Length: 192
Image (spheres, one colour):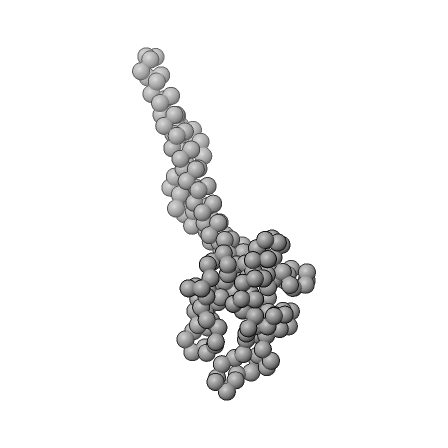
């Protein structure tokens, strides 16, 4: 066998290996970016620095309506004369903990109409022009830090189910994107 005929399979093997490394790297990079986007709005009630910042921001921006002790306004389930619902409590007596992290973030950032539609009347402003994403997470993390362990666990379960579903969808998208690249034949052997 000539040197040229021996070099060809080796060259094909190196090219195949390089392609394989690029494909695997791309899959991991896309998964990491997708996973990061899914979980970037996760509340951090156990991070003391985040909670301290959130406490300051809550007092400055939220306490005037939702109460210094997160108690909300009285009769918060009944529309006022202006047709709007009063500010709900964020403590265990309210419904804040019934909503997943992402939804709480969206309501705070974009306002209630972004979720409930334009017919929903509320004094809750959109905080996008006022607070950064990190500051919104800090405020929500402070609120969550005040809940009992049982309520935190129930909230984690609510948020976790959604995050798991989102990760599964992201994983399926990655597999579909690279499906045609999964098998690479070199010297009649399947490497991946």
